[in-house]
Length: 225
Image (cartoon, rainbow, N blue to C red; front, side, top):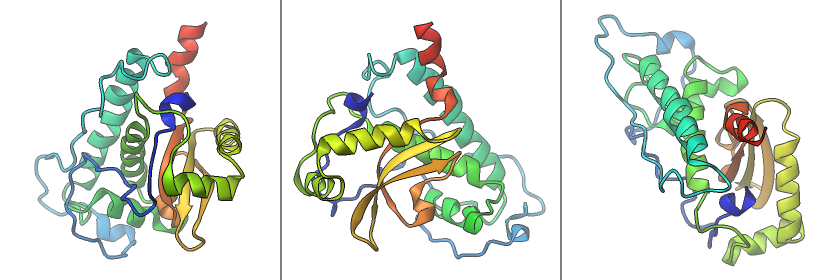
């Protein structure tokens, strides 16, 4: 799986957050977290799409044998799509309507006491980032500043891969393992997050992720048995 997930990145000065195909407004959202402020507005009508499910960045069979086209289609077409559709329903007619996906995530995280829209918003973002973390032609050491930081903060690329795999394998229950950058410390870190949480709510910049939710591995296990 690492051959599919470790892709090259040349500079931490680049924009690491993927271009989200979930097209929301770029307008920032004020930090107002009372539940009543996200109540549905009176007279709200038919649900209209606020975010769109972005097509995969490569053909669904492009990651084989690391990920089968059946697994990809099931994961993207069922689970990822459901997160986007449910989020659109949750925010329709509320003050979250028209805000960016990142803003919705940060506000609805609510300092660790998530509001109803958080899970679908974060999972929609996490999955788009997951697809864009992988590259059919990826694998092997990165280059440039990222490799320098990996060597500095983990000792070597091989040591990083070992620790990254261990982080994913030891995440208790559903969740994610991330390579992230902490601007305050100017260091790379491995971050494990439960359920829908991601490094954005912890003040980190995500660089790479592994999905360790059961629904991702289900078809892989079934195929092997």
